[in-house]
Length: 323
Image 1 (cartoon, rainbow, N blue to C red):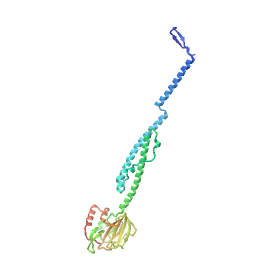
Image 2 (image 1 turned 90 degrees about the vertical axis):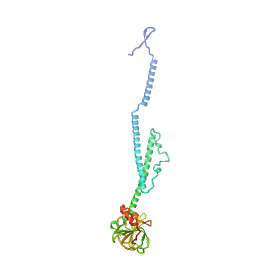
Image 3 (image 1 turned 135 degrees about the horizontal axis):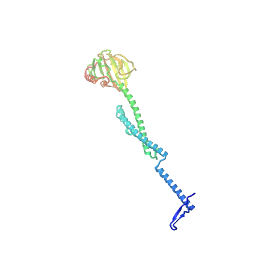
């Protein structure tokens, strides 16, 4: 049973029964519904602005994690760029300089990418700038690595050639110091032992007993081992490549044959006095691109500084040669 409500009427000084019309009730109910709907809408609107759904929270965490990953990637790229810069510096200042190769220009190492916009697909997002910059730096680092890799390949080839060159050039004394009687004559104007006239002597004469071992002064191929050259008697010529040829004359006998490959320090023959020779000795010459040059500059391989100084002093004396 519904409750009956009354109100106090001051004019009649009595309580009167409240009569509620249906229209009024409907009005109040409509106002209530409208207020509830408005309140609900405001609650949802404010809640959606200040409160996040579980899905939004998950997406926010994922975005935050991606930002953190990009920051870590940025630091790793800083480290990679520092390592690359160090390699590039050594490449230009040490490796390429040592092997007499031109340094790689800085603009070639740092060159960007022209043409179309490579990063258009990353535009229009909240963190587009961060993503584009990270991808741009990665592309540049990748290109620098490719340039440096090609440079190191070139240096490896240069090093191989340099090693071959260093082992090929005639760099040791062909007769051991303990086997020498003396260094009889050097490169330059000397007295001819037969005519007694001053004549240019194109090699070095090492006096040693007949049969003293003679060694190849560098890697190469024996081009001649015969006695058909005028004045040299039995002699050997070794082609070292790179324009260098060494000659060993007045030999007693050979220990190699034509077209044989030899290494520096290999026994190739023995001291004698064949051909135009006054006494047992080795006449030693070096050719560079077909021109005779002074052998004194090629003994860094087996002489100490003191021994070289003594040899240089003896070689500079204008005395009589032995051939």
